[in-house]
Image 1 (cartoon, rainbow, N blue to C red):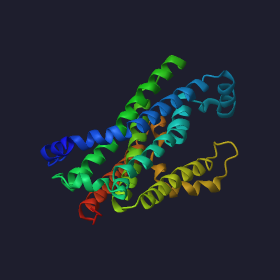
Image 2: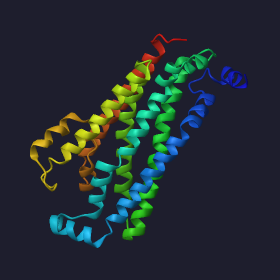
Image 3: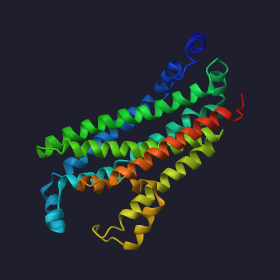
Image 4: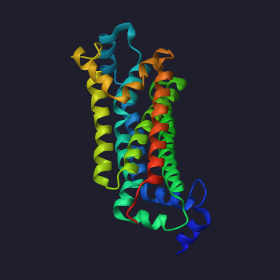
Length: 274
């Protein structure tokens, strides 16, 4: 009763604070675990790169083109970094809308004066906000670990890498959130949103093995780069100091804006089993 009264008082604006608190409470464990894992992962990768054997092998392979910061950027942010956030996004985006509709708990929320637009915007802001905090903490972890291991760090490049990865994940979050708003059953929301996420990641991995610089790379695999949105996060451009990454990230921002907007509009208009 107290929660209902609070929603009646505060749920008619753009954001519902009680709903936001509820989303944080329901998802904080998964968020904390995924954030801790990705930060630990970044520290471990950095530590591995300090191995003289690994560095020696890579120097022999790449010669004068060897750059430890470039290698860290391409390996972690281009390949390994997105894995854990993808899992968090797929599960959380489904749980914010589709799962609640499926279970019937959304009926309780909408039985109060809280508008549908308020619910949709609040859930969107939670998803984006939690990702932003994750990548803020990851930036700190990456800078500290690189400084500890190598004695110096390219702060600008590290921050750009994390910003780019955040935008990449925000675009994926928009797609998964849109699926969560489009479907009233979790199996469809998870199946389509999760399927798209998994394909984007696998295609990115296959496309990377089409790079001639990769050991045992097969050029034919480069075609997979054209089938994944993740190719728009151009880590090499950031490392090289060119501006190509800017327009590519702009496309990812547009994807995020469009998909979140479509999801909110659809949630406002769809028939729900209340």
